[in-house]
View 1: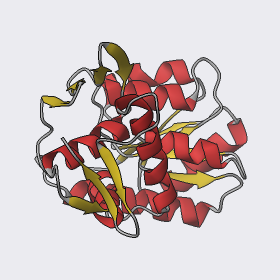
View 2: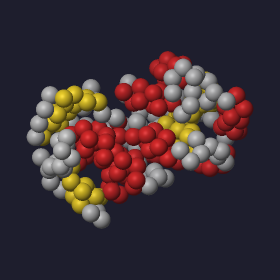
View 3: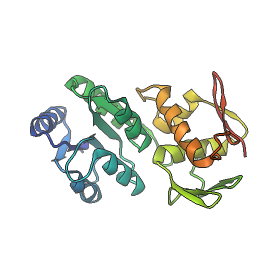
View 4: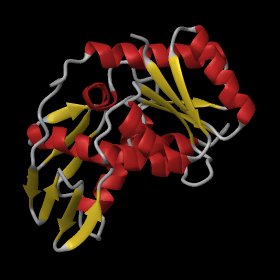
Length: 232
């Protein structure tokens, strides 16, 4: 059976060009131009991968990515970002995207990333990786993993998919140093093309949520040159 790819892009030339290239590689293609149309398609058509532009009418690619992960759609998401917009790349990955390609992009590069994401998805067993703990608690922090929400001393906050997965891995290995490479491999996947800066940004955002307002790090500690350690 053909793998099904959903292309979400409002530029008709790019959308049609991507659709033609993907069909030429043997994929079945669904394509839409409005972000608000995506979730119903995910529910009804169950695509195997989504190519998602950041700038969309109706709902931005960031919002689509966040909503898809919150609804527990685990298909690979490849985001299309504007040239030179590093923040777009970082934010997209933090919200649950698996990879990104910067516009203007080469079709061969994009297809190679699609192949890699689908191959990784095929190779991962359904129960790959440690199970997510239902509750994470330490100090005055409590996390409800199912709701992707938490609180620190009664002050509530939401967690992105990446933030939750990074924190859950560190929690499972509390007191141990987890290297940046291990975190990237387990949370982003072994074929992730990006840099450790993306992980570091997730750590910064987590600290803003779980540490005290004074900026003192009591729980999420940096082990310089190696990685991070969670102290309970």
